Each structure stands twice: as structure tokens, then as C-alpha cells.
Length: 209
Image 1 (tube, helix red, strand yellow):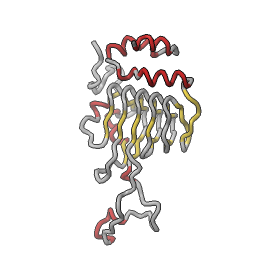
Image 2: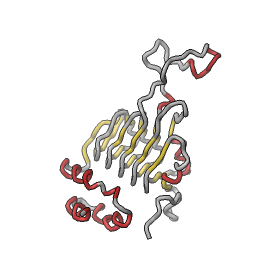
Image 3: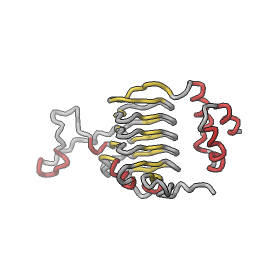
Image 4: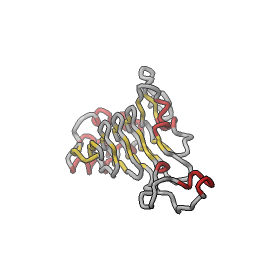
């Protein structure tokens, strides 16, 4: 019987893991696709606390794809913590209302939401900043600070994160993006799981037919 993506605790022997789809189902600023999970050494159900500055007065969201692996301490910074960098002061006078005259600064700085593709691995203590899009199959290294978009199947590390290398040859990446195995029915993915644990793209292509 296929594993339901709506289970909060999918592995009885590993209570440190939760599926994010059910955890975030009522979250006003975040969502996750099937089978993406979060691991925590403390409380995995605290993942919403890792979504920083998620304030209602800004239109932005965190969208996580399917089959993502997100490690302890990873955080996602939305735009509610932004300050004006192009004004004479960075102090957020408007949020204090009449105490400082309630000036109207115009639209709050908003770089856009955060989009995490499918089959992305985000390492321990990594930070993803506003407006970033992480491509399918990418890896974010431990403690990386990601301030710009990450191409599919790239490995990035550092602060600010830079591309270290690509996981696979360009031709294989193109084939995997075309195959889009993460959109297959779960029964088909289960049958393909051995092929997905190998390095033979041709074998997976054969199963895509």
C-alpha cells in the first residue's frame, strides 16, 4: 500500500521526521508538496518557526515542491523583515504608527516569495533569503546562505552561496527535467525507486514510457 503524503509522522522508528504537507496545510504563508520532509533533533513539528518574517502585510509565500529533504535548523526568510535601503534611514518608522508620525513610505520592500523545486536537499542550518528560487534536484550545503537563484541540479555552498558543481552532466540534467519523475503516480515512483538510487538515466527513461 502506498505511503500517504498526508501522514504527519511517516516513519514510526524516526519520530524526528515529519512530512511537511500536512504540517503546513493551514499555514497562511507556506505550503509543501507530497513527501517533502523535515528532520529536527528537537521538535520537527516546530518547522513553521523556521519560516521567518512571515507577516500578513506583505504578499509573499514559501512554496516547497515534492520529495524535498530539509535538515535541522534550515530557515526561510520572507520579506517582513526587510528595511528600506534606499532612504535616508533604515529605521522602520511606519510600523510604530503615530509614535513617529505614521509616515507613508510607499510599498514595503518585497523581493518576492521563496520557491523550492522538487527533489531538493537543504542541508543543516542553511538559510534561504527572500525572492530565491531553487531549481529541481539542487543541493544546498550546510550553513549556506542562499541569496540568489539556484539552477536545477546545482550544488551551492558558502555565504553568499555559490555554485560548487553540478550533480550530473548537463545532458542527464536535461533528461531528468524532461522525465519529471516526481509527477508520476506513487505506484510508478515506488517501482522506479531502485533506478532512482542508481546513476543510469537511461534506465529511468525506459520506465517513463
